[in-house]
Amino acid sequence: MTTRHRLAGAARVCAAASSLALALAACGDDDPGQTQGGDDPGADAGSDLSFDADPDGALDVANEPDASTCGAEPYEVEVIGTVGLDGSGFSPTLTFDRPECAESTVIIMEGSDLATFIVASVVAPDGSEPVTAELTRQLDPLEQLFLGPFPGQFLSPNRTNSASGAAAALIPNNPDVVAPAGTYEFVVQGGILGNTLQPYTGTVEVTIIHKLQGTADGGVLDVNLFFTGAGGLTAESAPDSALMQAAVSRLDEIYSQVGIRTGEVRYFDVDAGFQTITSIEGPGNDMIRMFARGDGAPPGLNFFFVTRFEIQGAPGGAIGGISGGIPGPPLSPGAWRAGVAVSTEAAQGSSDALGFVMAHEGGHFLGLSHVVEFFGAEDPLADTPTGDAANTNLMFPTQGAGAELTAGQGFVLHNNPEVRR
Ligand SMILES: [Zn+2]
Image (cartoon, rainbow, N blue to C red; front, side, top):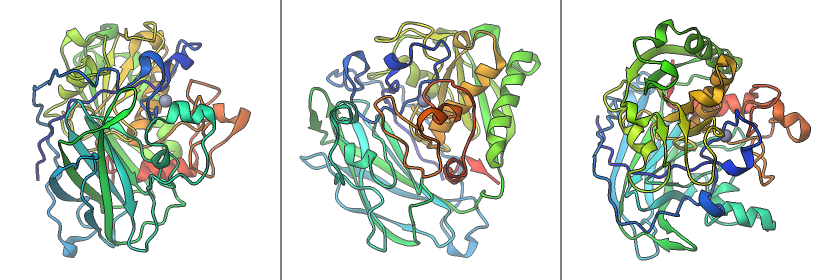
């Protein structure tokens, strides 16, 4: 089954300005909402420029839904199709049927690059609400500042992030969320970010992927490495590059803490024009156009190696990497958010730093939040470290004292369909 991806999203830097103190800052795309200043993901939302390169990201999961093969196939894909959003930016109530054997379910939304999308709410068959817009507590002023228009979803048991152009939600992404089999109701929302959120009244393509084969006892992550020539690396040279091979080994070492090993490692060249990424926001920005060059690659976690990011609000060289989403759209090479961009310059020749950034940003892409955000919010996982100990974790916002992963974080990674048997 193939789904056509027509994405032109604007990626965001996770409060990049706050991470500038460290040259190796690994910055993800997990700013859950609008932020101040040049970091506003909606800053360009008013543009009428529509990027129409139409990358064809193949969702290479040729598995038809069939209860008789439950567990025999890795995935089941439910194409909800084109959904119209009403005058308030909301879809009608949609449904998906989670099979008995599903380990996880991903909702993928793809639409205009002018709009930001989010799963507004999810109601499980048992009546529980893993994702809700309702706030269960008051926000403090810093949270109000950083959480933007979707704080309820961010604070939901199943934390859910918005993203422009394309967004995804992984359910469950927390061991404390019970996700029974059966029919789920959900609503998706589109908005145009500016000083306030305006409803987006266009359409959005909605696709559901149910992961049918569990990988909790050990999984494999294939990786696609895309080279712009940054750092002198090419698809031809990288297999013999001590730096790159040590970085890939470091990635494998970090994820092996939770039983995930690197599978196939594939090498590709992309246009040298992407060596310096000058825009990560707004329609047709550098980063999403680069991610679109992943079209045609087999499924895998896509790492794009650039020299540096030269973007508004963040001096060059300060950003280690950026993820296309939290999570990004899985199993969709060539989709405009299907990738992670990594700076070779920021790693300063250190394979350990390069591998760390790959693992950190890859963690975002697979669905992990920062253990603690710059504005103080902790992740929803019960077993991740807090306080001074938080910097020992891979998902500390900057490279800290370690690259540890907890069992709870392993649960999230195992649930992503990018991780296979
Ligand atoms: Zn990050």
